[in-house]
Length: 218
Image 1 (cartoon, one colour):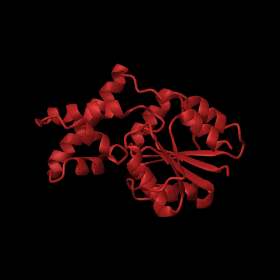
Image 2 (cartoon, one colour; image 1 turned 90 degrees about the horizontal axis):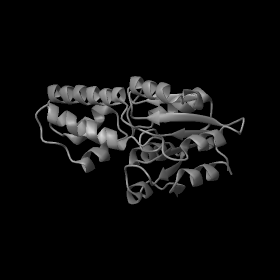
Image 3 (cartoon, rainbow, N blue to C red; image 1 turned 30 degrees about the horizontal axis):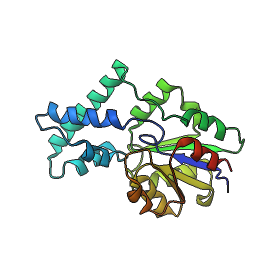
């Protein structure tokens, strides 16, 4: 079956951004006087909205501490962009998107834990805004794993749930799709391991972008 709407996560699915996210969060913790957070702990929360990620990463912190960490992280992330620190698409993503777009009825969307401003910056800097028919960010709606952003994308693009598929590298992606009864595909090149993804009953686990796009075009 070819899905009319393909919804893609961003960080860890399309873009190899986890190293920058981990580095910036670790540096932000030091900026506010904490010991560096473990890379494993930071990778675990990639995919959530930033406030939700910080709450999970640092349970029990005060509102003021959370606000300070969020501000320092955002400053670090933007500074890395300004310095041109590499954050590439995974190999095969750009050609795969072009392959999908050869089908006239194909619709593509993004569902991400990034902020609206953050996603817009990266869409502009990579020239990828035209790839997508719609996008949702965590600060526009509710953070994953709440499925509201998926419901909104379905409504905006007038696609029934059975004609859509969610693709992501985290359990948050697959969990929100599962809650809606939406088909879902896990990718093994991102932040959560195969066992965590398979716990959410994906249709399939993709091990590389080229194979994934070939499968989607069948």
